[in-house]
Image (cartoon, rainbow, N blue to C red; front, side, top):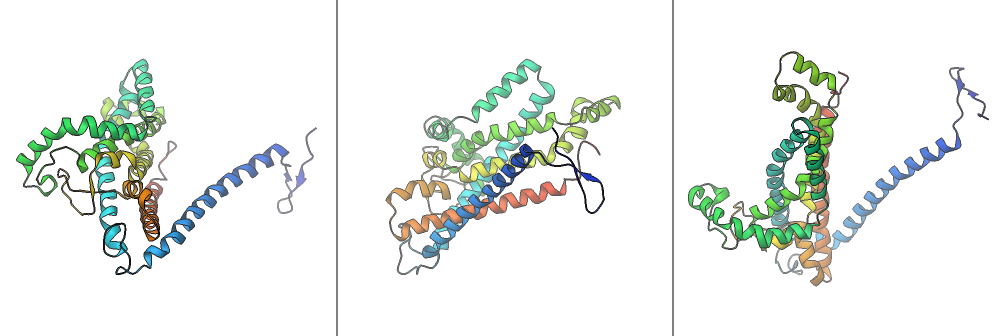
Length: 320
């Protein structure tokens, strides 16, 4: 039997009694949401507490993982390399991912779209160490002659300044590997967003004489812009925190070098932690954890900016 309804004290209208299953489900969602916040707070607290010895250490008394100087002199090149490599990867992956997503959602025949979508999803399941091995063994030697041509032709531009790496294991190679790794993430999410575009919007644009590409510009891309931004930020977060692929491709150095074709490359925070942590001890461990805190802050800033951009487009929906 259904439980009797209670009367609301404010409006006098009957207030339905919540069933036990509803209360259990509501409580479970609250616990799950609170658990995420608790885990994030615990991680942040751990990073802060373990970083204090490195942040307060005297540069004259401590050698930070073999690099003399203050902590900020140590982490500066690592933070630069992290953001630089991830930005290059996003710059290469985002246009390709949007193109693939649009082809799957609006151009490809249904059978081809299903097969291509499956391949894209399967690409996301490949371990990062496999991408790293592919980048260092296959991609780097194959693309090295092209790097030589770039330096000979566009060496006057600081980005392509020489001397060119003889092995092809450069920051650009690492960025290409990262771009391939984040491509399926951005593509899959963008595809699902584009498929959610209201059919009435698309049909209205076509009925007014728009071509398919004009319809995509008018209806699909504006509707999917917040979703594409979210997908891009998820891909950027993956690139910022990637470890093994970068560690296998790059020959790291603690320098700030904007050139992307030389053998002296800026390492990333995640790769530096993976390479140095097994041999670290005492204050060196705290130093590496402190660099992890810097990476945590960078990721938090990136996600906050993305959330701000998405909230500005919150008013656009399929109903208006």
